[in-house]
Amino acid sequence: MNAYLEKVLKETREKNASQPEFCQTIEEVLTSLEPVIERHPEYEKVDLLGRMVEPERIFSFRVAWEDDNGNWHTNRGYRCQFNGAIGPYKGGLRFRGNVTEGMIKFLGFEQTFKNSLTGLPIGGGKGGSDFDPAGKSDAEIMRFCQAYMSTLYKYIGPDVDVPAGDIGVGAREIGFLYGAYRHLKSVFENGVLTGKGLSYGGSLIRPEATGYGAIYYLQEVLAHENDTIVGKRIGVSGYGNVSWGIIKKAVELGAVCCYISGSDGYVHDPEGINTDEKIEYLLEMREKHTGVKAYADKYGCEFYPGEKIWGVKDVDIFMPAATQNEVDMEEAKQIVESGVKYYIEVSNMPTTNEAIAYLKENGVIVAPSKAVNAGGVAVSALEMSQNSERLSWTAEEVDQKLHGIMKNIHKISVEAAEEYGLGYDLIAGANIAGFQKVADAMMAQGVF
Image 1 (spheres, one colour):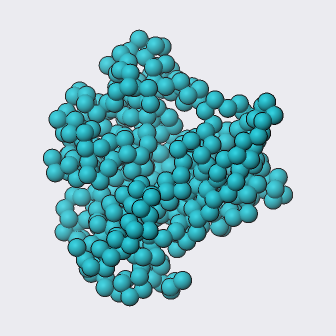
Image 2: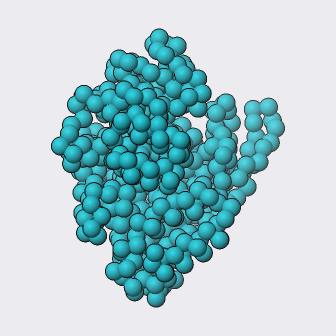
Image 3: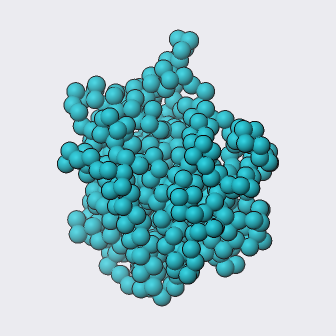
C-alpha cells in the first residue's frame, strides 16, 4: 500500500477507535484511491487525505422537550458539516434511538462523495438526534423539532448548510423544522431545508427520488451486462420511503418486487407488490411503524419472523435499502449461494467491507450505495434550484433530470475505474470519481 495512504488510515483508526462505522467507511473509500494517490504525489505535501477524512466542523447540543404528560426529556442533537469545498453542506437529519456521533460522521463523509457524484454544487454534511419519533404524538414530535431547531438554526442557511430528511425525518418533521426556522429567523428562506411540502417550496417526486434513482442506476448496470429489467424479480430490505420508491419504479418498468423486510422479519409475496393499493399500503405501514407482518396479514402472504431475505433463491437482484451493516459475511455467503448476480446497495453502507470483498470475489456485481442512492440528494439539490429561481418544475421534468443524473453517475464511475485499469469496478469507480472533484476543489482553494 502507498505509504502516505497507509499513514492516513493508521492515524484515522487511532483517532476514531471508538467509532467503528466511521473507520469502516474511511477504509473502504481510501483503499480504492491508491492508484490516484500514486499518480498525484502532490497530495501528500498538503496532507489532502488527512484533511479530507477530518470534518470541517462537527457539534453536538442538548435538546430538551416536553411530552404530552408535562414531563421533560433531554436528547442529544448533532450536525456534521464535513466538507464544503464544492458547495454548501448538504445532507439529511436522522432521528433514531441509535444515532451517535460516529454514525453522523460516517454518513457525512459518505455524503461528501455522493454529492460530488451528482455533478451538482453541494458539499457534504449530516445530522440528527438520538430521539426516536416512533410512538410519539404529533404534538410531541413538533415540540422536539422546535427544540432541535432552536440551536441548529444558528448554523444553517441556503448558502451555508441545507439539511433534509433521513430515517425518522419525513415530511411531517421537515414541516415542523421549517416552521421553527422561519419563526426564529423571521424570514422565508425556503432553500434552507429540502424535502418540504409542495405548498411551501417542495419539489415533486422528492419522496420517491432515492428509490427511483436506484432503479435508474440498476438499469445502467443491466444494460452494461446486455440485460434488461423487464421480468426481473427483486428482493428489497426495508419498507420505508426508499423501498416504496424502488418498488413503484420497478413495477412501472416491468420488474416485480416479491420480498420486503423489516426489523420483525420478512414477507414473501409471490405475486409481487404490483398494484397501486399494495404499493401505497407501504406508506401507511411506515407512518404507523407496523413492521412488515402487517403486509402479510393484509394480503395473505407468508411471514418469516426474525429472518432476513438474503437466503432466498427465487430472485435475480438484491437491493438492501434498510440501514447500515445489515449484510455481513454470513449473509454474503447466503447471497452467493442463492445464485444472484446483482447486488445493488441502496441504504448507506449496508454491507461490511469483508462481505463486499467476498461478493466480488464470487462474481456478484456490486453497486455502491454512494452512487446508487444519490437520487435523493440530487432531487434535493434540484429543489434548491427551484427555490432560488422561484420555479416549479413538473414531475416529468424532475424525473427526467433525475434519470439523466443517475445515468451520468454510472458513466463517470465506469470511466474512472477504467482510467486506472480496474475494469468494471463500480465501487472503486464511484470512490475515485467522487474524490477527484472534491480533491480538485480543495487543491484550488489552498490549505486551511
